[in-house]
Length: 270
Image (cartoon, rainbow, N blue to C red):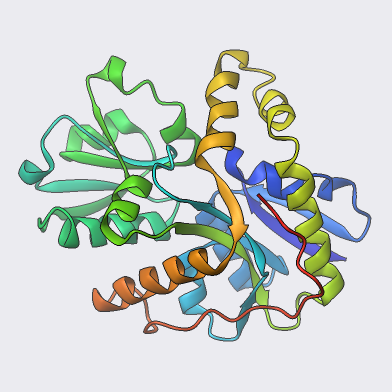
């Protein structure tokens, strides 16, 4: 049995459609940082891990064809602030994902030309902004936050990245040790993604069953902001991110060329 660990946010649900019913796979959900830790500890075989995690694991491979990505606004990874970024001196980082935290550091240096102090806190925007000028939130907390009611600006990190580089951003992907996935495993994960991306409205409705007021936001998010295909432009976006991470010394390893599991014919994903 292949043990899978996925992130617990809405954005991963199209990639795991039907996998919980597959007798050859087990599936659990956690925040991105926990997925990365479970993979490191050997508690799962493949994790939907934040992109930066791969730089710390030189022997790992990536499942081809499938990722959590965006091109332009992503809606679920953002800085929230009441100030102009030129006046920001402290930034509170959501502890849930190193990839997004590193991207904030890159954008502060390269896009905003500021050098703030960074602190790491749990994802509570009120508590974060009580101690810092800006706050990074990711996933559902960022997507569903009524920031206007709080008098906040929302600076979308996906939009800033694409504006700076002209490229998509790859937030996470399936990854694991080199022997963790045979071609049949890769094909099964690609099939799940193809099935899920063909049923986005149903997935949004199911996810928001207990909070139906969120469903229109969820449906728009999956249709308009998420990109699940891991193609050539996404690979180039990932390479560019790795170079930026290395330039700021934010990972133990320098930039690396992405390495993928062997696979049969790729199942196309929107």
